[in-house]
Length: 240
Ligand SMILES: O=C(CO)[C@@H](O)[C@H](O)COP(=O)(O)O
Image (cartoon, rainbow, N blue to C red; front, top):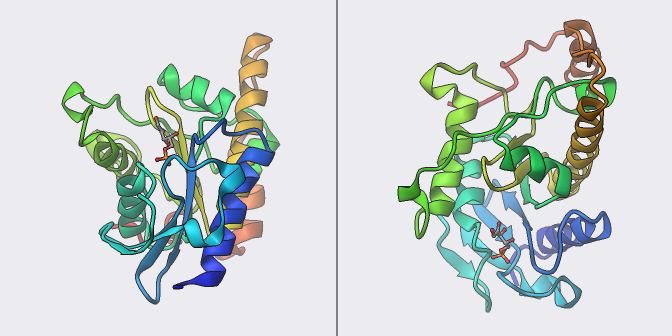
């Protein structure tokens, strides 16, 4: 059985989504990548989380071709593999339907950075993709989802490019969040925090107080603590 340790890490990340209430039934998924072997381990499609075991995970190459597995890979495989190909420094991807982040996604709204909790994890608003075209619905929806995320971070159509290491999440308009990290544990952790900051933002905006968008200094506070005082925003990325 290939990649035993990575399978266990990806399983733990999938179960963390359930434990933290970010998914129901078989919703959502997690995957991890072994960059040296160019292999992805992803959750099987439609299998109850209670029954999931490391040996149920599906192993594919970076193009999504199945290398080892008795189950169908997650239906979101194309999005995961595209993100691995385009965001060369990420080690894992998580997709959830967590309630507050999904509410922002369903309204096509980015999650604004309204506090230090947000700023400590996301170097600015958590963006939302363009709406996916009707042509994308159906067989190509999952692929188009990945394309829309990558285009948003590359700054296609004149929007500001975003460093995926500085903002490890994106809301898919009309759908839900995709989140990533250095490894499966980190990606799941970021997904949990994303839901927490989405909930805080939702309630802050409801209070209709004059939300204090965090200052550059607050964004920098954690970013340079995490990436080093000499880091330069954007240079930590290998995104083409
Ligand atoms: O977003 C969706 C469906 O809208 C998927 O993420 C499902 O929620 C989980 O599908 P599998 O990973 O079990 O194929």
